[in-house]
Amino acid sequence: MLLTSLIAGKEQLVSLYGRAVAALPARTAALEPFRQRHAAHLQALRALLPAGSGTGTFPASPAPASSSASPSERPSAVSVEALRDAERRAASARPAQMATASPALAQLLASIGACEAVHVVALGRVRD
Amino acid sequence: MTETSAEPARAPTGAPVGDALGRALSAEHAAVYAYGVIGGKTSGALLRRATAGFDAHRARRDQLRTLITQRGGTPAEPGPTYRLPFEVRGPADAVRLAVLVEQRVTTAYLELAADRDPALRRIAALAAQECATRAYGWQPKIGPFPGMDRAGADFDVAIPTPGAESPSAASSGPAGSAGAPGQEAQPEPSAPDGQ
Image 1 (cartoon, rainbow over the protein chains, first blue to last red):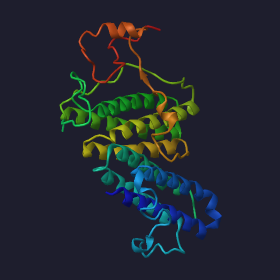
Image 2: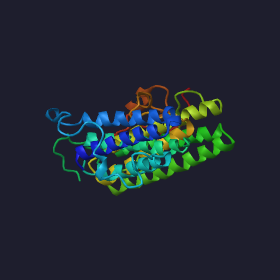
Image 3: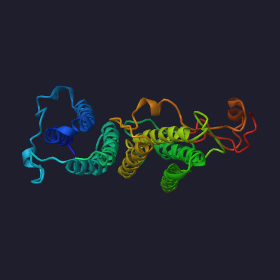
Image 4: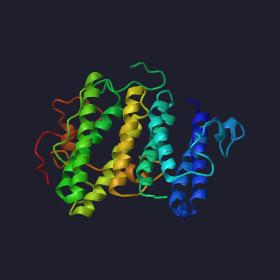
């Protein structure tokens, strides 16, 4: 799994939270810490890019989500349950992504996956 | 599985299996012990949570033992007793200890997640997710990088207590264990009478 793909996936999660906050203003305070943790993950993943590749090699912000977002995740309607599904998918994909990763990336992905797994549970306490 | 290109050779005696695997087992041994204490100081829903944690760590401990044996290693036994970071006087202390235990074990699994063996990486990833989730169950706080938190890495939650009071007494008499595998504080089988 390419690091750039991992970064793109994390960018999608960050933007998904951005859309959820926009759709659920009453939940902004509850959801913002989740988004911030994903932003921290994104930063950590980007830090593993080779020095020369910088942020110019690929879009550093809002992912090209149009191609991969499922039809049910229209920009205007992101529910807490949709966030939960996304977190669940992200966490369960980490072990496979780690198989061929460098040791440092594998360790980082394990920690990120643990955070995402916690998010799945924690989002159960956030109602939309 | 043992070819090394960039890493130095492992300890010649006693540690043919990855050190991270052994350390994960040590962490699980300590977790099982700690959860025994936690269960003794809790009741009701907290006790049920403690029991679930105890069972989960015991299952992982057994799994790690099997993995070490399968790889030609000898799984370390738990210490006869462990020194906890603070006295567990009641439920609040028990919860605090449980959080620390889960953080500590998560850290151990993060190390295993960097192992060369993809099978071990997978197990480590899943176990780390379980530990972090349990920690959240005990205390609903979330950090962005579970297992990398300083609080969890700064000290051991449960240190095996050697039988003798002075560490030198334990280390000067390694009767049967020449080069204990990755166990700086290999507990002696004698009773902890050196208070």
